[in-house]
Length: 163
Image (cartoon, rainbow, N blue to C red):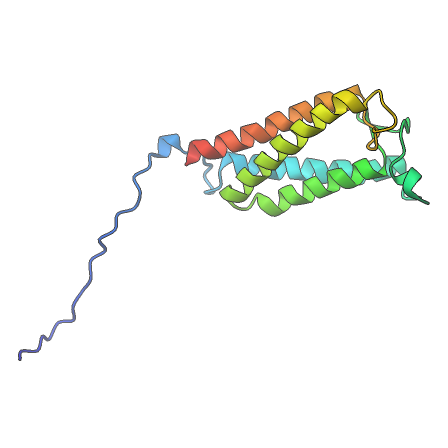
């Protein structure tokens, strides 16, 4: 039996997937535009949640204060209550947690699209009905919810473009 003096070298036989850089929505840092959009949206919602508490205050003595209706307290034309502020904070923190990866940004975009699409439809019925309007929404909120749903769709579409 012969022995070889040279070690055996292995060649890589699997090829990397052939993707064109033209179809990728990427930035120079390696992150996609949809990831940065998810980051910006997340930061905006955290900012809105925090700023909202400066408007509504933190003095919540019970259920009725937390889910107050017709509060006449507005942030950038959108009527808010403490529950609305918490929703904004949660959405913002979710965006900040998910923007790091493309799959996370895509998930965040899908959640925005589904969640705010549902909020828009809910708002069509809730705005003029104090019995079900637990987030103290007004017509401006409805338009904002529709716009937020569309931003979520853009995040998903941009991330799909990269795939």
